Length: 149
Ligand code: DQA
Image (cartoon, rainbow, N blue to C red; front, side, top):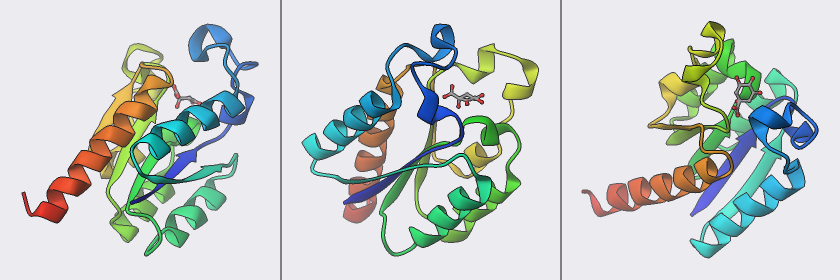
């Protein structure tokens, strides 16, 4: 199984960026965490981070025929991007959404998630652990699909 893990704008600044909300660990630590979670589950991880909406759309399109599942934290594009929603719907790759913080308990504008509308599930407010939960959830989902369950 191959999973594409997408992180959106400003997540490259983890550690520096609003540590009270996003924690003190940096993006390299997050990459290592995701990589280790995938490898211990026998999953090949493809890690991608971009600050640009169009690059994220391009990467989702390129995943067609390449990735079995997508784990995505669209960051600020969560609350604005119909383009990322449409890309996820277009490729029809099972996707799970992750947010480090609990977007339902913050400002009103963070309560809507456009990409989340094309995702099987969301994991919010769990920090790095949310990515592990998303990877495990997606793996189980795909295994059940293959079994025809
Ligand atoms: C975030 C939540 C978003 O509202 C915010 O714009 C981010 C990070 C999170 O992981 O908690 O950049 O996606």
